[in-house]
Length: 533
Image (cartoon, rainbow, N blue to C red; front, side, top):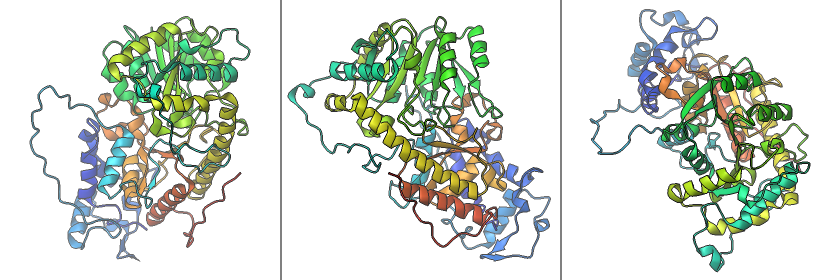
């Protein structure tokens, strides 16, 4: 069972809270008070029996002074202990912050995205990318030759003379043609209107693509859905030429985007929609019927910005290599206002190459190319030439089949482990795409029921997850951290290799065991599951 030491040192936890991006950190000090109040529907910290030096105590929760907050109670216990925590580092002193130094012309309001923030905090606990940690926070797939049936990742690329020059800001023609051909063969066989290289813009990464798009949008309301990709926050706040409108999705509907919701947005004057499909962080994908209707609704009224970086990670068609894309529902490639983002980052497990693309009408592509000339300068030329052969449609299909079988195996593994630990999964909340799991914590006791407390405990087990409140995207409207939607969720990535997933699940298992909420005894050793061919 967990004791007050195992709940974490007060100073350590407050120090963690102090690093939250503003304005989340304004309310962070209230967390300990929340823990001390208990909850009729959950097991609070007071509901846990105390343990001294690993030996269960006969004391009951009634021995916790009712007129003291948990914070004071913990401070009292910490003062009597040697190190304040049996399984954690010695508590650090309360940080002393110097007065802010004036930095002329510098915008200091920008905050870390969720992945960057959790990586920084893990670094403070000793993480530097080593294998002893399970990084289930980074949104990247395993990048080695570890997927059975996948083509071997290049270890070197040729750099001919013509690749030593600057590439056009729209990308080299050869790669643009390869992207257009891939979309035509895969999604547009039955359409008369076909993409050409003029419908493709190569960009140096997904964020760069989103930034270019944001720079060319003008005088409109742009709706985006919550939760979604954390990096949208900076994109939506960087430019002032449009007004971003957040649209929260419902937990009761498993965060699905309903078409009536789209109709409502269009009726109130929205003329641009941004969404990921498949969705980050929920791991769900719109059906083909939903996507077709979405295009019908928006074709004459609204720009659709479709982030399809996870489209190859689709598991509902028996891992046949099929995928769902808006490209299938575009009637006229130069008239339908649809911009599609994808790239080598996720689909080909080459995040370090930073080769991505935007597919859309020619006039949008021309504007995006012009924006690239002053925003980012374009993508790396040698990597563009090296990527051309990857887009051969038969090769892509083979790669997708291997990818889907391997990542579905990893998804099934972590769901099986977490189900045994007491987490509940149904058809509606089981991810059918991406490599993310949107894990609900509200049934757990005490601090584990909120994402920051769960994250804090994970750090001590060398496991990294992303607290759910980072996916709000629009934190400026918040006043209290505990009021944040998805306060009781964390995102777990099953992108890493299976060995890291095993370590991560073992670490979460130990946390639940320590807090007395694991429904079984921990076996001596976990076996790494065999990979399916």
